[in-house]
Image 1 (spheres, chains in turn brown, green):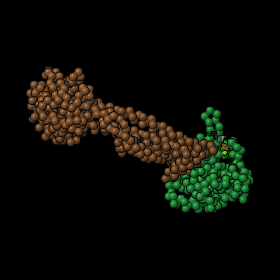
Image 2: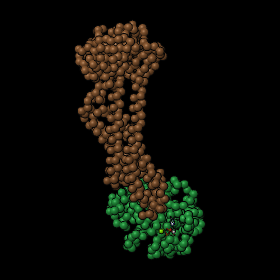
Image 3: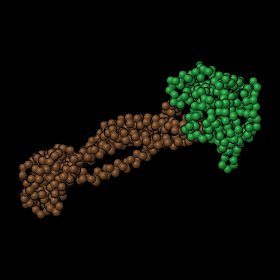
Image 4: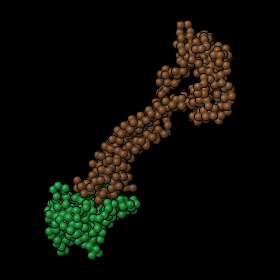
Length: 388
Length: 231
Ligand SMILES: Nc1ncnc2c1ncn2[C@@H]1O[C@H](COP(=O)(O)OP(=O)(O)O)[C@@H](O)[C@H]1O
Ligand SMILES: [Mg+2]
């Protein structure tokens, strides 16, 4: 492979310029890897927290009905399905909570705390009191930290719930939870039987949460439940479809910026290659006279682009890796409710990001090399030789 | 016929330019024998370089044919031209055109590497040829570490290393002082006699031309003189 020999000599003979073009590629690759790692980190935190803090499947009443009647049978049936870990039935109702002169709208959930805890671990979010205290069918309520603040209430205070169609009822606060999400402002839990009684609806529910061993199997199982039972089963994926597609489209948008950044570094490569080709006109002519084919001339300069690009990519990957680690280790002073309780930037170092950024950069660099390489290969040997 | 003549040129014409046409070669007929040492002379602009470039298959004529060892080179594909240049032709120009990033030995190896010969074999052959041109002790010098005459010797070694049947030189001593020129000519003459290769040299130097087998004189793209030297 004399082509490789010639290519490496050309590169070595222009140390300073090659260094600059390699640095440009390395920086582009490094920056984009940091970007990608942060995007990955942010996405996976968002998804993890969604999976962790929501039922994987929510089963709701049939079309046109308000309740699921005779739900114990359905509960057992779903529980026995493949991949289901836990089921929690709930009765949900809108209500206004009132304490002295303060009133706040709330989504009131009547639940069985043991079942609910198995579907979504509420206990871990408890800021004060215990979630299990709702096992007692008395008038107890657990509400969010924000809600408690808004109402200006504390543990042991009694709030009045105004429930449309059922009148007022008093509940004593036996727990306050804090998730760091908007849930803290809108959800409150009471005992299932207590709420059913209060509503006078009999032993019915408005929905059922399901936890699965594999959250990503939820979509398929939801469809199956839908088909089999006729109840409206929705997976977390469907429920969060908007956010998930938003994440995907924003990823698409980001690729646009990647192309711009890589193109800038590609121009660096094209620039040095154009300079080499211009300087080596006579040499190219002589190589042709010696019998080098046009294909080989082209290959020489594409190899140069490839070598510069590859070196830049390798250095860039190392840079990106180091910088991602450094960013991941920085703790940031943000109030925990802002970013899902994070205290540092979400960075996820994924091999796939390195491969994507690397191949992307390499392809753009080789494309940048095509123009000068073609120009060299199309030279007229006579003109090239006598131009010197 | 083709036994005796390595090159047969028939009615070769080369016209340059789209608007104003310049007839650089105008119906040249020329046969060159195997092993002949031929000088081409003529005033500047008479078409000497153009003729050499057609013989060297670096350019294509407007009309006419060139048979190299019986094969019409004007009909060849681009790829075949490259291969033919590599295997059957050696080139020496006024400027040595050595690759500046390679040392003398590597430069001489280059035609062999291009033809696909293994590097170890190429190195061996190149060393022998470099020794033949008297540069055995300068092999690892780069062009910028050698004198003009030495570089031209490296270029000669490079032209000969593939054992081509025809070596063409366009004013190979045009850049050298007269002493270095004499040395180069003696070397070329010696190599020509030892290897029985055909040498076609363009020169301005009448004194040099007289040492060759035959002198072709070009004027305005036509052969105006064809005289054998008596030796
Ligand atoms: N590429 C070209 N384009 C146009 N005219 C050319 C070109 N090459 C050579 N010529 C013309 O052809 C004629 C012969 O040129 P050349 O063969 O270089 O002469 P010599 O080598 O005898 O000095 C000259 O008139 C020159 O200007
Ligand atoms: Mg000339």
